[in-house]
Length: 366
Image (cartoon, rainbow, N blue to C red):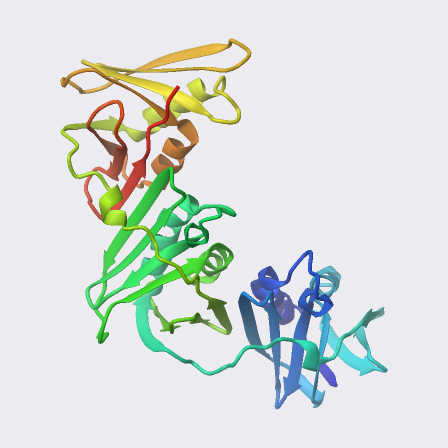
């Protein structure tokens, strides 16, 4: 195997796929990147067996071949070389020689046959969606995914695709994020898939900006996405996602509109003295004002107030302030809508001018 290519070309593609390389792996080859050189191109692939990322780039191939090399070392070496340099790879007695100018590196390799490369066929139902709509849906909801929850189906994002809509939903059992957007498709039946957390984060990072369409191939077990010269393949979570329609409140009889920036500032100030573990904050809605208060086990306290337009009966309710701030920071309008029922019910947070984004925050006892 003998190839040469531009530094910028390989660095950009390695950065796109390196997220699939396991930092702590029990199988050594999962720490490596697969290199397959043939016919003027180099295919690079990385996987942790759950998610696989492939990138294909142009290369000058003097001798075709395939091998795996340590992924993060390869990226670090290529990044450290001078800009616009040409890098040459030569496989020499099961070690890869990397040269550029006067720089020389010899790195260990593992056979390509040990690399668990997935089937490259585009199986399943194909659907084209605007890149910006999918990117927005992930950005607006992914923060609500659970982290290593025993309810494994919560450690991911529900993606629903129909002929009229693209919906994304995420919940960790304490909060829920919902986003919907109109699309035009021609599916025989709706698609409902739970994408694992790591794959969601990689997908959100790789989706190009703009309104061009990207193609998804969805089967019962896998999702494959073509993103420019990068292909992402991920296993899907096999489980029953909660019925989010039952979680989103529909009987909130108290509604108010608040300046988002002022509300975020008020909550952020008061949260400085909140319990570091539970981050509980008490919100008291009264005629014309919102009082925010908190305390911690060191008997420290904070209180702040904000003028609001509110004339319903007083409500006092506790929340995890981090959950509220996460929701507010994803809303793009200057004002936010808060919909409430009573001190024991969930709060619904929405943009001022749209019902396409909804955030549900469960109350907490303080």
